[in-house]
Length: 133
Image (tube, rainbow, N blue to C red; front, side):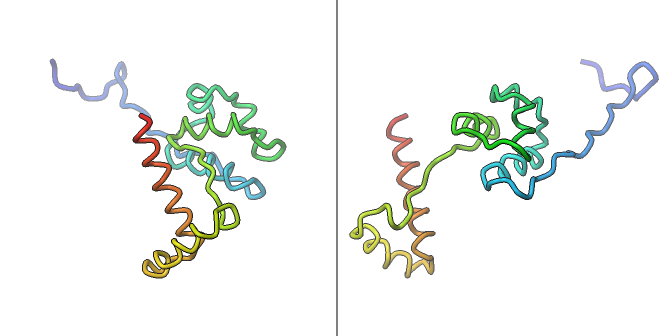
């Protein structure tokens, strides 16, 4: 292998990557805001996400002002950004005995009950995934 050569007219230095022009829409839902924030943070373009998720660029752009994504589309795009779309239960969805069992844990860790439920659900989801893989 030869050492890298100095930039020349024939082999110019690569152009620096332009900063992302993707902005986060103000009036969109939180899941859509997450998509655009992650696209910007990860330096992903609409074309990159279209290629990875199968959701067309025009559809992604329409989420900014006009349309709301369906579950299949948002899951595909979040998957392309290395996220999973996982529903989390609220306090009302859980049996009262589970909420009461979480209360001392939440108090000990100085957490609110909704935060404790989210963390417990996340742990249960991750453990379940490890068993099924």
